[in-house]
Image (cartoon, rainbow, N blue to C red; front, side):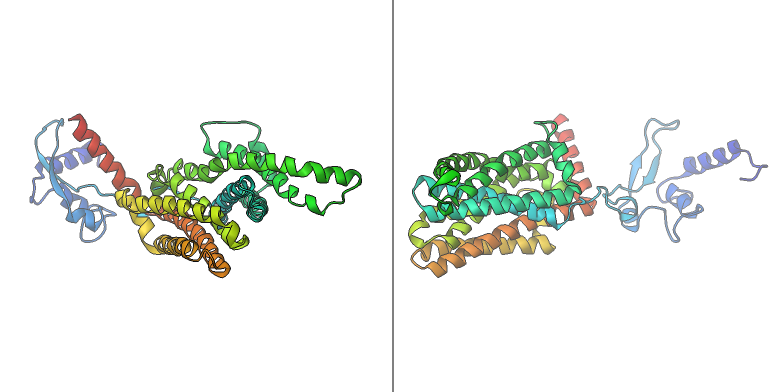
Length: 382
């Protein structure tokens, strides 16, 4: 700034130009901004789409209140088009964690059904799969946390208002119960005499109790991850807080049913077929709501990779249920149906995961819904 031009003179000249500005006038605000240093060539500093939608607003409360200034209408555009929210740092291992947690829950329910109805093949398959799946869940979770000690540190406090804290305790309660139930399946391989003979006699009743305890915890394990996603600021996850637990519960049941259809003979697969129907109904209903109820925020679930995954999940779910019902006398058809249900669960979990990540990367999914909510409040209040 030149020392011979006081700040007051510059301010007065700037104020005079504003006072003289009228819509279409030569000294309007838009033209002054266009000629100012640093402005893009050919127009004002606002984006082109914003200048095109500029409207005339009346400024009130000023010294001369009432004059009209050409002010660009604000849009959802963020600073240089950058995302407003930081996209989740979670990678594919968290999407896999969502699947393995649901599979562990569904398999434990399958095992409990086989235990109660006297179907040992279902019980065995469910218990072993549940242990494998919950172990994989722990591995994926620890991988995301970075150090195993961090999982232990999360058990220092129980915070009911934190889905992550509640989920850690659910996983800690479910894991040992599922492990004991699975180990009990090996009781028949132990010798009949000596200390191991005592373990052979004690393991089956202990395993039955542990299996029922795991099944009692399974619904919470199957659905808490949906609550966890909805508790974040990611737009398409947060707005789907009603649907995500339903989708994940149905997906867990369908995946557990898939294990039963693959591993059990057709004569024992009745509970698995019923689980498949119930799980498919919940999953398809929840997925349909996610893709239609959320307005603009449903868009990420219909486009790109998330859309392809969710469509594949629906098709595989329908095929798996149809095969389970129509091929009940064929072991091969039942196994193919179970495989389709497992693949559907994977596709659904990954589709939901990537849909939320996509919504965090585009600023319109953050700003437009906020403005719509603000407009609704103003309409209701006025």
